[in-house]
Length: 551
Ligand code: NG1
Ligand code: ZN
Image 1 (cartoon, rainbow, N blue to C red):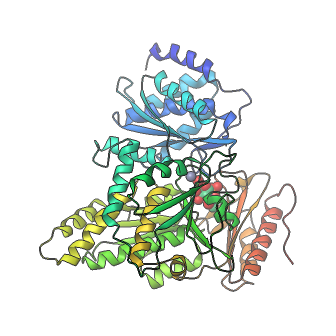
Image 2: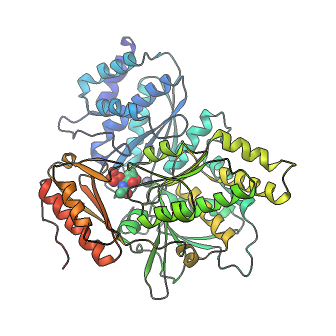
Image 3: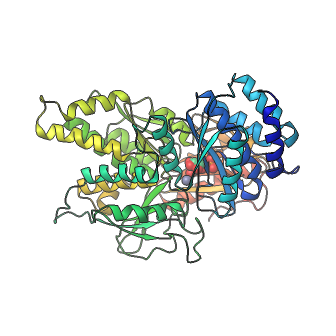
């Protein structure tokens, strides 16, 4: 690429140097994620890499998001978005890792290596969209990323504070010449609100569904954006937003989707209103879970599995109505999906279900195999994707004279459902509108939604070990390969409990091993989880206090 870039490197290197003792960071499940103070040089270098990627894709826009999602405030992260708005290509992850960790002195040569490897024409234009979450460390990282883009003559567009899925949406819009929508915050709202209004009928007076939703914004970006969005709904849905940031509320602290899901309790900051539907977002608004407290103040969680089944059930009914039964609808989950949901999907909904490794990129990939692929992680991260064939036949059905009004109407509803969906990635705001649409259509309150199937009690635990990568897995992470003897031990523990199931895997975002267990009672489940945690601690060199098994 010649010497003309070197002076720029030298200049930027001084601005965003890599400390000699900086930790080595991998491009993990969701990009780079660690304490914000270790990330400035990483953001700068990902700016460089985004430009290279853009040129490889003939100048298509690449996204760069500064966020650590559901992690606490001191953390931050950087992730890249590919041209269709999807997750960064996995084959480029090792390049991202290499570029992030190389010394400043070797930076130019690694860039040149990538240029040679992919035969990149450095004279091509390059475009990078940059967004960030509400963390106080995000603006500095955003500037570093922008400087990275400028350093090799790319064109950065800074969107400021946006949700992660909004940035994915903008990238897709730009690269489809606005066919997918307009790449701006207004354009995003417009697409969602128009689709929602098309689907939203008047609320029947005798319906159990009440158009009032409480929202836990996790003190992050999602609540703030919803506050803008809700004013555009013409009162069709009333949203009371809590944990919107400010008032000393800290991002994701004792609130938000991850807290609610893992702790299985309500967040702080949301008033207790029995039987009220509450939606909880995570810090960058790509996850959503629902919950409510019943008359005896018992907490009930409606998680990603529940959302997936609700949406899949509705789509199935529309497909049947407009006679598009040749369209193949499938659902994709991970090993964290509750066993009861998997049973319900295959036995009651009669929808094929696939299980893949943790991480939305794997789910998305698998969902592409269906005409209509619904994918959700139990933690509430997910969406629906529609093949071109599905879109074309639904569109044709909506104006097909051979169908009656009801059938055409079902097809039109599906078209609006497609527009209401952010197909690029899990999007808490879009998912919320989808859920509210289906609940209103079914006339369901939270109890009726909950009655679809009964979750098996489940428990997640974390175990600290010397090196979490001594644990390796197979069969979509449901079986453990290493260390020797651990799977046999898990099998024998699981066999003691009716409907028992447990698995372990190293986390891709935290330095811990995750343990998951489920069985028919809460007590058995807690005991099974703790026993498996002890086995991990023993066989994988646990550090710190050993886990204890409840008596
Ligand atoms: P890890 O830390 O690899 O388990 C967590 C979530 C993933 C995914 C990523 C990215 C669980 C059990 N794991 O990954 O599903 O959402 O974070 O945010 O929820
Ligand atoms: Zn997130």
